[in-house]
Every structure is written in structure tokens, then in C-alpha cells.
Image (cartoon, rainbow, N blue to C red):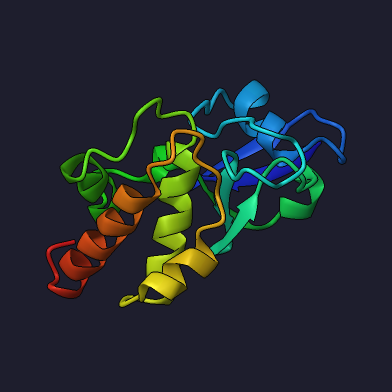
Amino acid sequence: MITLTVNGQTHRIDAEPDTPLLWVLRDFLRLNGTKYGCGIAYCGACTVEVDGNVVRACIVPASAAEGSDIRTIEDLDDHPVQRAWIEHQVPQCGYCQSGMIMAAKGLLDRNPEPSDADIDVAITNVCRCGTYTRIRAAIHTAAAKMREGRA
């Protein structure tokens, strides 16, 4: 049994300790916003926060997250990043967007005024639709709104 705190709720899960956190979230907890993309931590579709750190859930064993505060896209509720995503019409297919939004949130939590270079370094998620220009614009918009206190 593994005990995980996800989005503020504690869950006891009957999973093998080496089960990737991604599959625990999706298959055991039915939190399907976190997506499977590549399984090797490259694409970022599975991005979540563990103790405030942006991680790729496909390579984190669930047992390694035990005792941590895990946050998924389902925990965000009208966050400035989500509003900026809508304002800039970022998604095309949308598959990568939950991971992209979590990565952007993590960046803004650490750096409230990122430059384009900061964004390029921090957001390594892959968007096959190529909406990177809109992603960058949305991150700048969300940062400005968060700085203004309209978060």
C-alpha cells in the first residue's frame, strides 16, 4: 500500500512501489488530466507538481512521492495561466496542454517575471502543434496578471 496526498486529499493505493506516479494518478485515482506522451520524461504531457517542484510523472515511482504534496491540473481552478491560455487561444489539439500549463505555473511560482529566455529554458514540454509563440505570450500575460494581484 502506498499513501499519497493528491490535490489535498489523502489516498491509500494498492499499487506496486515502482508503479509510475502517472499510472497511479490515471488508473487508480482516475485523474485523467495528466497525460501519457512518451514514457521517458521527454515530452512533458505528464507534468505535475510534487512538493512545488515540476516533475514528469511518467518516471517518478509512486513510492518516491509518498509523503509529498502532489498537485495535478485538476487542482487548478480558474488559475491565471488557464485564463491566459484561453485568451491567447493556445491549444490546437490540446493533448499536451495540461502538462504545459503545470510547467508554466511552476515557472511563474519560481519566477514571477520571466524573460523569453527564462521561458525557453523552463518550458521544455513538447507541443506537436507548434503553438510555442502563443504559449510564450500566454505565460507573459499570466505573469502580468499575477503581479497585478488579479490572480
